[in-house]
Image (cartoon, rainbow, N blue to C red; front, top):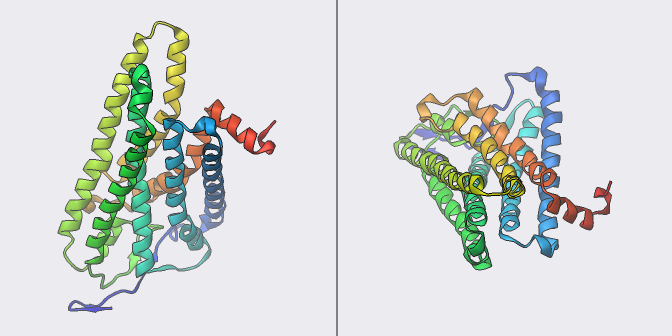
Length: 310
C-alpha cells in the first residue's frame, strides 16, 4: 500500500499487556476463564429462551438479543487478546484490524442502545401494566430490536468508512490489546478532524443521550414503585428491575471511565482497563446476573439441561 505520504503500513502490532510480561500467565488464565464463561453462559441463555415458550416475552426477547451482542463483542476481541499473552509480538493485518473494529463497535454500540430499549420495556411494564401487552407487542419489539441492530450497523459502517480513508505511515504499534478508534487516530499520518468529530457525536449519542433516557425511564419507574400500596408489589417490581440496573451501572461505568473524553486526552491505561470491563467482564457477568437473579431463567435451564439440577 502506497500513498503520496509514503509507504503505508499493512499490519499493526497490538501492544497488549507487553509492559507487564511477568503477569502474562496470570492474565492468560483469567482471560481464558472469562472467555469460556462468557461464551458458554450467553449461549445457554440463548438456548433457554429460544427453546422455552414460557420465555417468549418482551423482556426475554431483548435479553436474547443482549446475549447475542455479548457473544459478538467477546468473540471479536478475546482470541487476539489471548494470542498476545502467548506470543512475543502480536500483530494483526490492516484488514483484520478494520474488521475487528467494525464488529466490536457494532456490538458495543448496539448493547448501549438495547439497554435503553430494555429500560423502556421495564417502564412500560411497571408504569402502564394494563396496556403493556398492547404497547410491547411482538411486532413492536421486533421493530425495536431490528432498529437497534440496523442503526448501529449503519453508524458503524460510516465510522469504518471514515477510518478506511485515513493513511497510516508508521509507527504501527496500537497501544491497546485490540483495534480501537482513539489509538488508531493517533497513529494516522493524515487529517483525523472528521473522525474526531464523529467520535464526539457518537460518544454524545451512545453514551450521554442513552444514559439520560435510561435515567428518565427509571425515574418514572421508581416513582411508580413508591406509589404502590403493598410491600409485596414493591419488592416484585424492584426485583424485575434490579438485574437490568446492575448491568446498566456496570456497562456505563466502563464507558464513561474511558471514552467520554477528547481523543487528545486519551489514556492508554484507562482505556485498557475499560476494555477489559466491557469486552470481557461484562459479557461474562451479564448471563450470571440475569440467571442467578431470575427464577424463570434458572427453571428453563434446569428443564433443558438436567445437569443444572441440584
